[in-house]
Amino acid sequence: MSVLTQALNYVVPSPFQRPFRAFHRDYIFHSAFHRFVKTPEAALDPDLGLLSQLIYGWGNEGWSAREEFLVASLRHALCTKGNILECGTGLSTLLLGIIAQQNGRCLWSLEHSRPWGRKVRDELRTYRIDAVNMFVKPLKDYGEYTWYDAPLDKLPGNFSLVVCDGPPGSTPGGRYGLVPVMKRRMAPGAVILLKDGIREGEQAIASRWVEEMSADGELIGEQDPYIELRLPRRS
Image 1 (cartoon, rainbow, N blue to C red):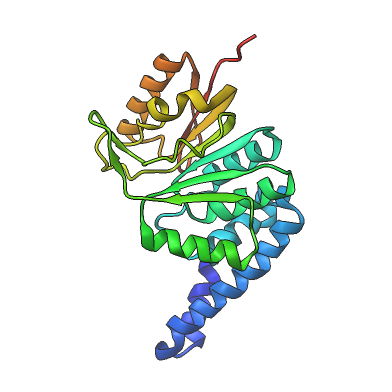
Image 2: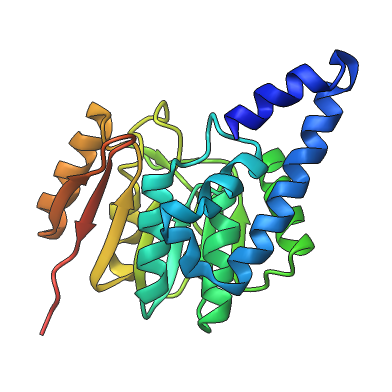
C-alpha cells in the first residue's frame, strides 16, 4: 500500500490528493471487507494481503492493532466456543463481530470515547453486523485503578476470549482493571490477549494477572509483541 500511495502522490495533483486518498481507502476497505466476510480465515494468510488491505482501508494505522495482534485475535475467535470480550474498539470490532455473527456467538465491546464509539457504531450498521453489543461510557475510577464502567448487569459470565487493547496506557492503573472487574465472568481456560506487550507497564500488569489468576503467560510477536495469557481449566 505504501508503494501505491507514493505513486498516487506523483499522479494526482496536490489539491485532490486528500479526497482521492480517502476515496481510495474506502474502496480498498469495502472490497477487502467483503472478501473477509466470505472467508475470514483468509485474513490469517499474510501472502494474501487481506489483513494489510483492511488496516490500510480502515485508515487509522497510528492506533489500529498491527497484524500480529489482529491475526492472534482472529485465530482465537475462529476456534473459541464462548462469548468474546473486547476492551477498546476499532477495526477489530468489525472483524471479530463478523466471526461471532457467523458462528452464532456474541462480541461484547467496551469503549470510553463517544466520538470514536459513534464511528465504530456507524460502521457496524453499514455492514449489518448485529452480533456486537457495544457499550460506550467514560472510564470509571475504582480507587486503585481506572477502567471501563462495564455494565455488569448485562454482561454474560462465560467469556472464553478477551481481546485487550484499552484503555490507553496513560490511564491510572493502565489495563489492570480487566481482571479485578471481570475475572468472575471468564470461563475456565479462557484466553486473554494483551496488546502492547513490549511496554513495561503491560508486562507488569500481565505479571499481576498471572499471579492473581494462576494463569500461564507468554510474550509473542516480533513487530509489535503482545502477551497471551491462558487461565487454568477447572475439573
